[in-house]
Length: 276
Ligand code: PDD
Image: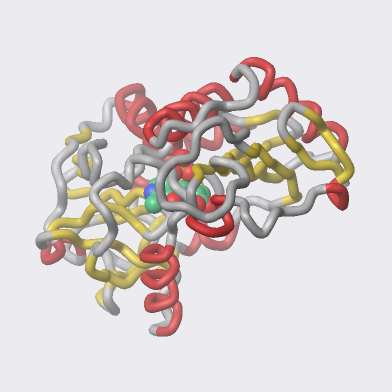
């Protein structure tokens, strides 16, 4: 197994984390999760662009150009023989005796690895359940930061109540999932939260917006209220791993007839044509 360390591919077992890595001590860093289909990295440029945006937002420099990083990831996929899988990329500020301020002159640490992941076919066909939880995250979640404690606790709450995903609600409005974007469909129109500081603008979300336009499905960047959510005709969530995943119940209430809705199904079909 090989992994990425800085601008080199090295055997995975050669990588170790320092006690004083700021990612380890403070969550002082950013990350990306990228999909691989048929040995090809999916939406590579978009993910690298977002990594760059996240890094800039917290004043970390990437150790190499995005172009070089893209090449390294391609090599990582190849050297590990990944066909259908994912890449995890993490950039931390680096190693320094623990201080709260941003130390000068330290070297950021970029690591990455690849693993096999099958498509979540059962969830895609049968849908998942969701539980709404209060969105108590900070106000800059458009940065894909390593600090995921609220997401973890929300997911834990959902799981302990038998639900698959947690859906965050802020001031009565649905923002996004614990690790996904959320959409509701009513009368054929797709509603989703605007891509501002209150959500992570998913790469899958951006593909869905484009596909909606191509399919002539009207979509609006208008938040859905928590009360409206369970009354939508269809609900789905999206992320790099889950793709376009129907949500068939929210807080124990069945959405529509409890099966994949027709708009969700047509978006799924269009998405699938792109990954083949
Ligand atoms: N998370 N919103 C949040 C809070 C997320 O964590 C994610 C993805 C998304 C969807 O983004 P994308 O379509 O680019 O995957 C939205 C990844 C999968 C994770 O943390 O594992």
